[in-house]
Image 1: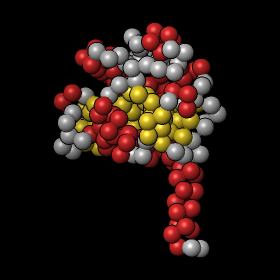
Image 2: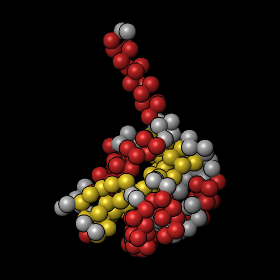
Image 3: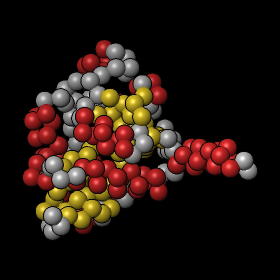
Length: 192
């Protein structure tokens, strides 16, 4: 497998329709709900330098993008997709790692979070330092929650006042929090 995983560039906008078609197919196949995305939204993320794409030559293999909320205090790595023929090869983990690194670079002060129904994504997130959190610890920005409206499970979220859904919420601390924690541990262990 010679798959390249790169920060998406405007030349990759041509994959937007295929990416969105795969989101819809994945949601149907999983039966757990997935928020709908439009090609223009995917193109916008690519133009803003907030996306990672995986390609096998010219063939789309996977994709993920970054969203920011609450004045860039919170960042979500959203829309992780790996096409069926590329699954079970560690590609989702590699894409998620690349978009996580891009998020850290672009938003070092932000907490990175995600909501998912996928156990595989939860395992990947855990390996990157995410911890399960309650929905109240996520951004309360209405624009974020409005993105859930196209999910078939939105009524569950609404009935529970955005405190509970079928998704699991996970969060990684900001890069600054990680550095502060590491420095504190260094001082404690070395007595400096």
